[in-house]
Image (cartoon, rainbow, N blue to C red):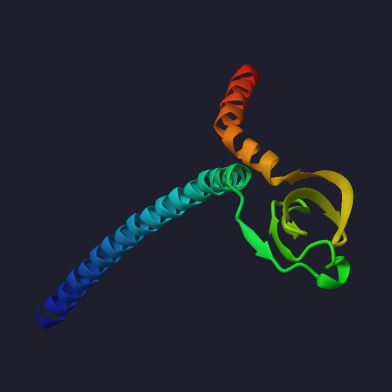
Length: 151
């Protein structure tokens, strides 16, 4: 009788272990499925946000570029023409330069290639610059209207 109760006890233990193993396996499968779902959601979030972020940053660059003040290489300039110079990067190798030439203020917006000014640009005296600044809201409205026509 002892032998049969021992065998019964082993069968009971085996059933208990199988039940626990099955329960653990089911728990693992459940957690693995949760991890898969979370991974898929993160992947989808990246797929959506990376292009969206790129578009937003590109639009932000286009709308309001970073103002970067640069030092002007004085060896490339005729200092007898400009006694004061500040230069601002407007993106794509275009710079706005403020120059004091014999007491006359010049705002020059010009394309540079290999750190050398090209003929592609415009120099505005102070009166022209101030007029352009006054016209900025009107020009902005015109840009907005032109964009709406394209859409």
